[in-house]
Image (cartoon, rainbow, N blue to C red; front, top):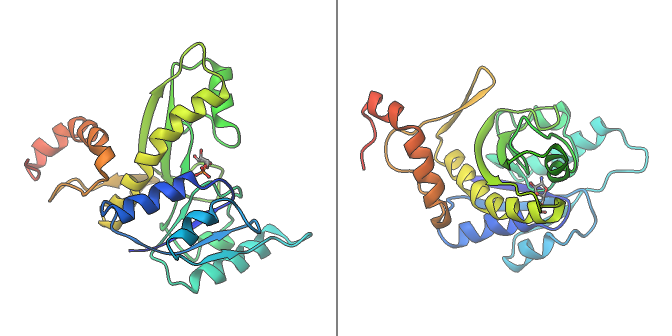
Length: 234
Ligand code: GRF
């Protein structure tokens, strides 16, 4: 699967994706990394591996639609099978999304549909929830509203502030995003009635080594389905 990644900042999820590819756990080829910023720190990770980077910076008074159409044309030039948003700080409009139907995914640092939008970790701390986490989802034109692919949870303790919680969630993001992309690469994801369905039949999905625990949890939670269909054995 040819993948394009869109970033705006730090790039730790991009790094996790690239590490999973290098380690042989994620079966994609990253064709290019795009940003709406001139020189985001994330570009360093791509450059280190000789992956081309592209800055597509919005013009001062450029409309969202115009920018998205321009970005889409550039991305389309690399003929990607999928587009992964990794800390890309813009909400994409149909001018972009319509070119890649069901092929754009994002990671969000909360258990959606809770705490959409900015500062999800601060929202979680303020709400006093006992658990938060991260969600990989397909992107639609809403803010963090698309069909959910995978989620990982972390506990929130009373001493947590935005930073400590963000760090705990980030460690989960780095495992969960490559795992979700691997499911996409293996053609195991379908969207039906606004829900993302995972095909667990056939061989065990090849997940990054760190995701063994997540896989075990997923497999266990799907045990009934597996037994009913009798299609999975290990
Ligand atoms: C992550 O927390 C991600 O969930 C959110 O933006 C942050 C990006 O971090 N969408 P990084 O640039 O991948 O380090």
